[in-house]
Length: 472
Image (cartoon, rainbow, N blue to C red):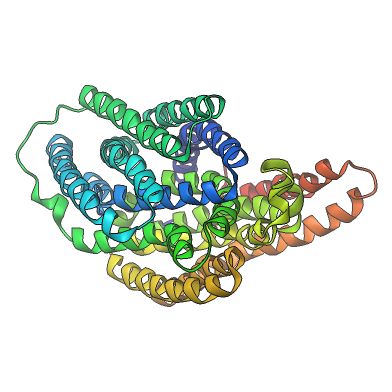
């Protein structure tokens, strides 16, 4: 029991979370996988240097697009999770703020991009990707937060699916039409914009958007803004810093390898997204309930993290050659992927700890941890990027995540207890993978043998997890 809550109540919560995660997977993995495949085809078509240009533009676009949120999604979910919350006024207030942020951000981008970059192709590529994306992400973010809060994950999935599907269609069309890098950049931005308009229409049909200005949505917004800026900076630092200290070709190699763990993390990341509003609600009831759900979240995410990380860390050459082509295997992308594959597993530990801090009203601690990690990561990116190019940036990414993990552990009471059970699954994964690999290496096709140990581990771990953690 947790407090006075029977285990079957916990089981009901977990079943609901997993059901909502399933809906999110349709948008995050099912359809966005099409975009990822289309992006891979684009990379194979335009080459490492042009793809490096596109990667810088998309990294800049992602950073600029966050400026239409600035932590509003977190404060919206926090306030909307409270008993007797008035969602129409909260949603209307969030919409007004996002439109205001979008206008300011668009003006600033138009002014600073010509100053920051001398390369005309790079400047134009950034603008074509960024301006439409700003408005698309503004409306998508509000819709996603609203339906995440109301646990209508099928609508969140639908919004993301529309955006991703439209983007994928444009990218594939561009390959056949021999587009240049600027047109591909605009395709990404336009896909976000179409998704944003669709999200706004669905939101208007679902919520009345009436009421007075709700000031509570801005309470402690600054903390969430800083935390969000820091969080969005971490995945964008690689392309943005590497472009300054190495060649665009190295940026292309890094971005191609980095895309693979990003895709892999969509599944454990979706689990985290489904748990997030529940952690807030449980936190209002009591710390013990919040802790229980954080442990369950981390265990599920670590099981998936090990499943996805090991094959790509041990066989990066196979995957780079299959996904991007053999010409990409001659560069630094192979060793870069070998290092970055572990990001999926490290993320599966850091994200639950960070969410635990946020949902227990320790957002300030999370900001300090992420901020320190950002400074550390920027320095390492510069130093190692200059010396080792894409491989150096990969080392910097993992180092940044590990530093953040230790900071979270220091900041969260009981963090060792939360992690302990997850370490059991990680160790179990290593052992099962090695044994399964040794048993299957001589009888299975190499491509099948790569995934067979992971499949055995996944099935075994989920059975143990079901027995030890939740009594369904």
